[in-house]
Image (cartoon, rainbow, N blue to C red; front, side, top):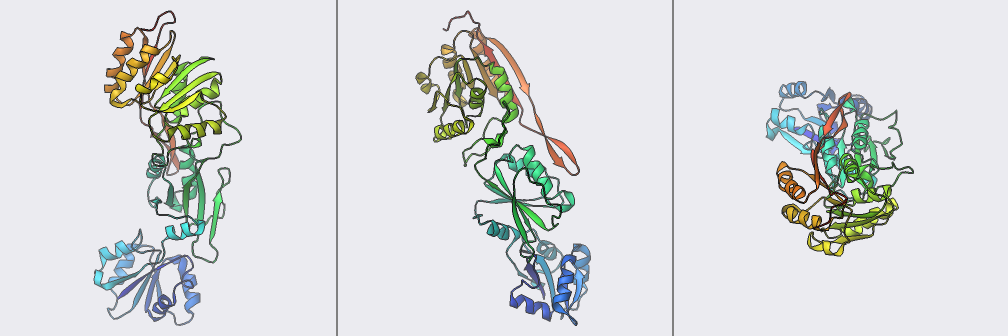
Length: 417
């Protein structure tokens, strides 16, 4: 029988008495090399023979050649059957020969140390992998994410770079957990400006926990990082990304004064940035999702701007409550988008501008004709942005979704229909 015992970083001293007894009875113990010194000191003279378990294939060859009557112990981190050596042992040896004794996983220990429930947490492993999956996962804005790092490929610094590239450093607390279970374990929260410790232990993981982002002392004139906006917890990441937001603000050609409609306002990112640029504008934000008004108002308060009004309702029906616009951003509409656009064109003032970001060419084909038929000057552009993301020792460009932007401008002398 091969006893596969899960451990924390404090093994063997931290093992339960029953597992320590198995170690004392074993003829052979397979363990990571980092545990050998502690095992030899703990067992003293006459202890079991030690072999390294760091390389699975040589380990399996040795285990297959052992006397069937010998008691063998394999020490593994946490739960051997959760991203551990257990899977490889089951592939190479008869299952009946193996008995598993799991210890708390590194995730359990990490969340226990920071004192946070983890039933809503997700995890991701970077062992032997480039960090593209982490970049993609961050775009989904998980409530909590544990990252099993690979110190040979960057470790905690790679996680920090991915977080920074996504513009989310202010949206997550960054917990660095080292040597969990060892008497010298270290758990610390790092602020965005804190450096990764120079004495970082290779045995570490990172836990990211979403939290209301703190505004830095200095904000850019426009193009705020995505992570600064409060978002719906059940639809995280569903917002106009920074690169697209900058383009839309430019295409709106914001006047000093006037009325701006933000239809399908989401979290309010475009309209609120417009107010930061043109404080005298009247922003009327409309979003059909329940609870959106409170969220947009909260983002407005954080940014020090005040919309004229934020409404929850469905367009085009809710447009009757709004004054005629000088500028319109249409970010929603769904299947009713043509009817919505036609309702907007009936109200758009002379010299007014309507800007519509689109995801499909079909939507472009549907919405361009009403603009032209109404006599607006029409422009179409497609925008593709990439963000730098860590890749091994370099940087790769991770693409954001391409966006089509349809823009219509009504002549200043024209009258509304």
